[in-house]
Image 1: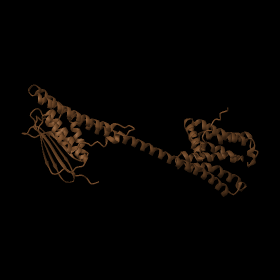
Image 2: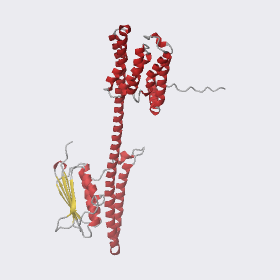
Image 3: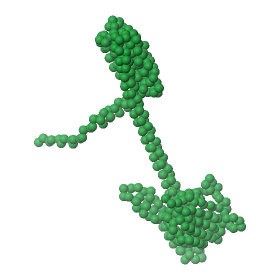
Image 4: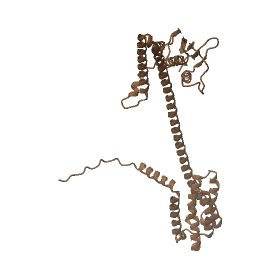
Length: 422
């Protein structure tokens, strides 16, 4: 039993314009790679056409059919061979054809190959400064002026001869100018597209760098603070283990809860970096960032780690989430530094003052050993630069340094101005 092979689906015929454009792009690409090939082919075509005319056809329009054939061959080559340089040196090629065109008119041969000067005028308009057209028109018009002067009305009224030649030159130049304008316009569009693509890539890189910096700040705040709390709890539990096992058990419980809290925050942050087919990114954004309502839990952890903290609040908090996160992280970083550097028996004080329209002032002080800023281009690690970056997002100011004598300890002072109406 014969099996009939199913016919392929009928595809829509390619539009003629798209086909022509595709072929044109391929030809242009080939021409850019091997320009000499196209120049040789086109020049060879016109040389052959000129020689065919020189074999006898020229006599049908000649003023003097008795011109020697050898001279006609030389003049035909002189009018066609310079086309080889029409793209690289169109002005020089046009000038090279002028002697042959003048001799052709003077001898009466009136070769049709002289029309090839119009192609050179076209390339002058296409490739050279437009002011070059003036002398190109003069060169292409000179043989016509010589014919009118030598043969008078026998070749027709002078104004008709000169008008016809100028019209032909004008059409050739206009075509060249049109092609040149379109080419320049296309080049401008391509350059603009390349610039836009470069700017887009730069914006993507800047956005990625800003996101990396934001994630680095969050990681530093989460890990640095919780590890400092865990370290304080571990040290306290070690000393309490010998005297009060119950206190050691409480310290271990606090270490466990602090560790779980840190892991939960890290998972939330790392979920934002995930981008899979199940839409994890969208779910991660639903996890709330820390706010001022979470401040009590933060202070409880710090107190369990052995740092007494008291707070003073003036006014009522009515801040957007971004400002609340900035205050939370600055308090967290300030208390983390106190845990790490203030030494034993230090205490901390947090003073929050709320004003209208989102303005707020925060001061965190401690009674530790204090000291100068750590060495480094940014004042040490990521802590202080991170606090300043968060503050600058809202046009605020942040000062951090030792408290003035005779007081001891460290002071962090933050001020966020009123929100700017959008």
